Length: 173
Image (tube, rainbow, N blue to C red; front, top):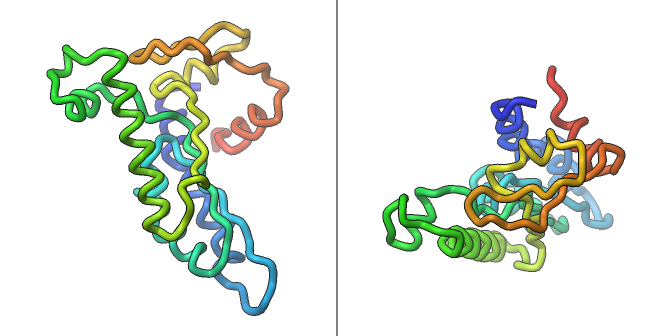
C-alpha cells in the first residue's frame, strides 16, 4: 500500500464515527441503554480536530465514548522543535517523547472538557511515521519509530483480526 493511500485511510478514520455511531447515540427517544461510540484517530488530538462535536453530543445524550489513538503522536520534527524550543536539526529522541507526552495530555484534557473521562483515551502507541512499513511487513521484524528509535514494535501476522479489520476499512475503491 502506498504511503499516500495509508495517509488517506488514517485521515479518514475519524470520519467513520459519524455514520456508524452517532445516529443511534444521539437519537435515543426513551429510557434505553446508552449506546457506545468509539472514535479512531491517527494521533492524539486528531479526535478533537475531527470529531469534537460528535463526542460532545454523544456524551450529552448518555453515550459511552472511547477514543483510540493509533500512534503516540511523536513523529513530527517541527512540532518537537517547537515544544522543546530547539532548532529542528537539534532535536533528539527525548524531544519527540516530550511532544508525545504533550499531545497525549492535551487529548486527555480535551476529552474531559468535552464531558468525557481521561481514562477513556486509549493510546495504541504504534510508530508515528512508520505505519506504512508496519502495514507492508510480512514477518516479525522489529519496526522502529524513525525519531524516537523505539524498538518494541513488531509487525503482526496477516491472520490476526485487527489486521483484517484494518485491511477491510482501507481497501481501495
